Image (cartoon, rainbow, N blue to C red; front, side):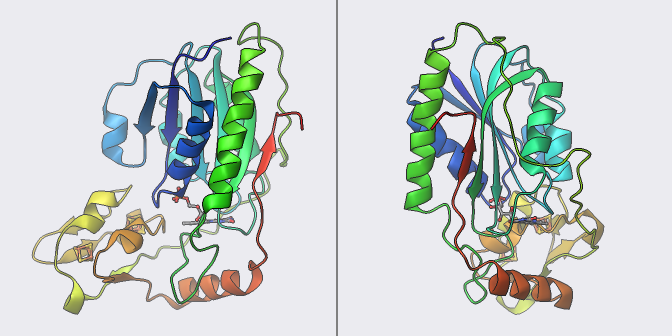
Length: 269
Ligand SMILES: Cc1cc2nc3c(=O)[nH]c(=O)nc-3n(C[C@H](O)[C@H](O)[C@H](O)COP(=O)(O)O)c2cc1C
Ligand code: SF4
Ligand code: SF4
């Protein structure tokens, strides 16, 4: 089969998933690459036609060993018809547990035909300069692996006769899924003394939890702890004050120091 177009479909609050998908697309080396960014509610408002004969790379971060609920609800609005897909999760150097299996199963339910998958590592959303957890990842080595993976995907697809050729992509994970994220009603806070009320935090929030008037207010119950607002704030005014969140970050910093490497599935090595 010939690949004419690639579509990148993703939920990526802090941008690491997006970077991995772009690198894989670079390795596939097709000119026509379209982004379908479902991170913000506005991304889901435009009408997206059902996928057909393009190759779709679907990506999401791992939250609590699973897919973020908002990624699931946004992906579920998409439809495909025997469309070749590559499923990707990006995790913060702890573990990806059931997330990639969940994404594969979800993609099949939407009409995709997943032919390869990967679990890559990204800087942990909870990481800061002072409390690093996989900081700077995906780095140049990860990007190189993603590019090589893209080239291998292209080879696999080129050798295929049709998209419905029998493919059984084996992905690690447990079904029924066993991982579960502990819900916490908490959000970052704003240090008003250094906030310039520029509005960047509100513009990157995937759940529209932040509003800007004369100052910044956050609807705590809408916060999914994605940390997009913290990483995007130009003055460092968005921070975690919550002691449990600080404890979690310190635990991850202490216990997830050993570098994990990307794992790929569906490609013979
Ligand atoms: C609420 C939440 C839960 C997370 N759970 C996990 C996890 O279970 N395992 C892990 O290794 N990383 C976990 N992470 C880290 C993200 O998977 C990781 O930082 C990812 O690169 C973020 O992707 P993005 O840049 O596309 O938003 C979690 C992040 C958040 C915000
Ligand atoms: S991005 Fe930072 S400086 Fe800008 S409004 Fe938000 S908290 Fe304030
Ligand atoms: S307020 Fe919560 S959901 Fe919104 S960007 Fe910040 S951490 Fe993410």
